Length: 211
DNA sequence: TTGTCGATTTTCT
DNA sequence: GAAAATCGACAAG
Picture 1 (cartoon, helix red, strand yellow):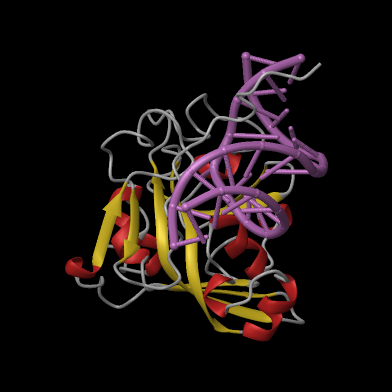
Picture 2 (spheres, helix red, strand yellow):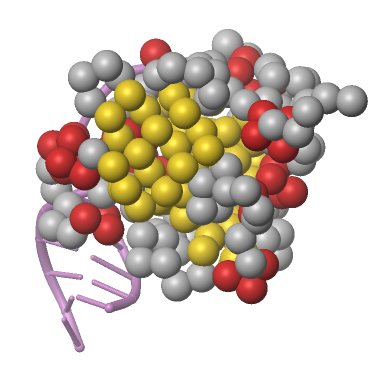
C-alpha cells in the first residue's frame, strides 16, 4: 500500500478532487519573492471526452503536461496576453485537471500588488484565472513543474471543506457542453469575496467588419 | 452595478 | 487563417 499523500489525493477525476483543493494553499517562491494563495474557486476539465478541454483533440505540444502525472502544474497562454494555471489530476494519460480560477492572497500581498497594478482592492488580486496566475508569478516556464517541489508548494486541507460551503455551477468562458449546459463543473467557496463574478461565454467579433 | 467591446499572440486546422 | 478555459475600460441607469 502506498502512503496517502497530497499527490495521491490528486490521482482521481478532477470533479472528485475539486472539493479537496478548495481552501488549499499554493505557494510560489521564485527565490526573490514569495506569494501564497488560498484557493477559493476552481473549474474541472475532464480530458479527451470534454469538448471544453484543451485535451479534447488529443495530445499536442501545448497540453502535454495535462497528459502526464498528477500533481504537476499545467500553464497555458491565451488571448495573446494571459496565462492560466491548472492542477493536473487523475492518472497519467487521462488529461483531467482543475483550472485555478480565483483565490485569496494570504502571503506576499505586497508582491502581488506590484505584479497586478489595476485592482483597487486586495480581493481582486487573484480574482480570475489570469489574475491569479499573474499574482503568483506563473508563466510558461512553470508548465510541467512539480506542485510539491521548489519553487512550488501545494498544501491541501487535512479534511475537505464542509460540502455545505461549496457551491457549483456552469463553467465560465466555455461554449458548448459544460459551459452553457447543466454540467456543474465550476466549484467555489460559497460567499467568499474573492470568487469571480460569473460571465457567460461570449462570441468574439460577431459584428460585421466595417470595411 | 450591469452590459458590451477592444487588445494581442500562441496554437491548431 | 481563425479561434482562444480573459481582463479591463467605458457607457448607461
